[in-house]
Image (cartoon, rainbow, N blue to C red; front, side):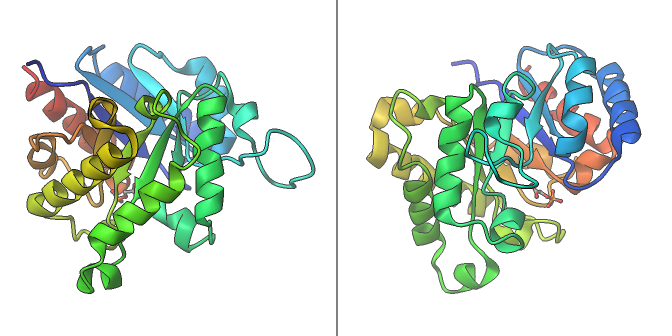
Length: 256
Ligand code: PGA
């Protein structure tokens, strides 16, 4: 069976102004060729999305929002809604640990955001993962189960194929302490099993699962070769064009 398309997602976080983001995108598009086996996605800051959407070659790169609000319009100072991002992005990160822990995003917000993305025609990339303390207390399984169950509560089995799950152990994000392949294998099977319980066997197989947390071009292949892992969510390494292009190249090479 041919393997599925790999997703390589660059999360730029709060980096690059409009000018630098545009130059980076231009260079990235020059560095990569159009691939049917790899989907490249970048998540720039909200400020730059509009202009990048006019520049992006969607056959090579798709855009993701890093965050958005779940209500469509109204008196919500400082927020940008999924409705306002419609047509600009193809994906949106939801429940990233920096949003959960630094900005106190609750399960309820995450659940509504997953639903708002689907309602507005883009795919939510739902981030789940345990903290270091939860890992030490052997709670990883329970945390993943609880986060998935809560976040997907408003998503039907017809819709769940549009949701991408990112396993992002909090202790591995931005620390250089990337998860071992065996950790990702275990977490991946907990996620798949939970999806199967919620939606049944067939539908759960369609959901793409990616790994994120201190991924570099040296560790990319190990994760991408895990059965059932469909890609990578890359933070720090996605800010360096050479590193990010190498990761994309590795994803492509393994599909040959
Ligand atoms: P990192 O970030 O690759 O810098 O660890 C990953 C993420 O936050 O999605």
